[in-house]
Length: 354
Image 1 (cartoon, rainbow, N blue to C red):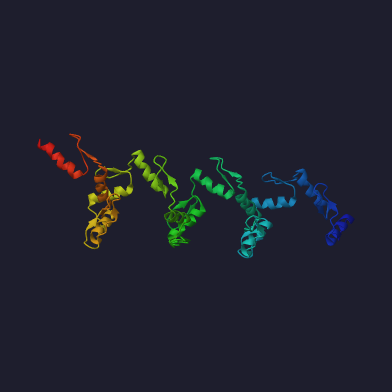
Image 2 (image 1 turned 90 degrees about the horizontal axis):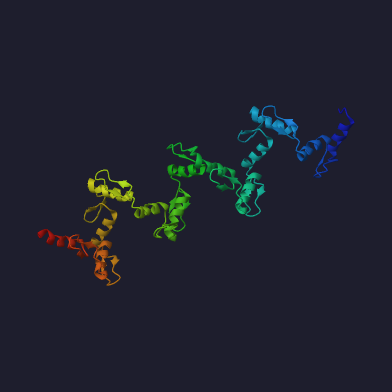
């Protein structure tokens, strides 16, 4: 029952589909005059509907009602699939695409599809190179807001993503997911060259350098290159003279932790590398490999000058002095030099006899 003739006419427009009330600014049309008036607030910037809780204003009463659910905590729109609830109807519609698998927003550049228009817009920045989300601390920029949020944890030191198995924490969720593969034993990243598998993509990339020979970490002092950054850092101790790894027994220091571990075996008497042929044991694996050549008769280290071969690289280096004339062992008493340490020791006896 309609009281006013105006309401009857407007209601008739709903049935006929007629939209006689037209916006003169953007040509959008409406079935009711009241809807046109609300629409005009968009152009004028007028926001007559004010929230009494936080003073935020809106151009439409419906928008105010939706906003109020933030303060009341009311979420009337419930998903029938997973019972997740939402404050706004369009949030529910967007959520339902997770269950339906619908991705109506398609990238025209690479054909990747998304369930939300916002995700498509952020994806487009990958192609355009646009990075609108800027860190106020270090000026780094990002294409996605969530990437910026993850980046901020570097400055705050916050690590909100915690492993429930070992209590290790991470700044980014993707790092936690990668870490979880350590516990699950999952190795989904496979090398196409040798079929070796890895739990983390960074480990696969590092492994690939074995096949490609790539050494992206360059020493700026001597131009030597390394496949991994940790090897470069270790190498830099040679130039700086830094020896951070100290033996607690004799106070001798080393530039590499591995060298310290091997040194400690001198004190403990440990020789973990055992020959399977004669049961002789060694502190270092390289010493075992060189020793094995005695049993095999293999002499892999060949002199490029005279063709003579040796079972150990150290023996080849000593041999090369016969060709180069190098005499690195110098007597401090008479400045005489020798090619071999044993020759120096024998020479020193001539001074002690005096």
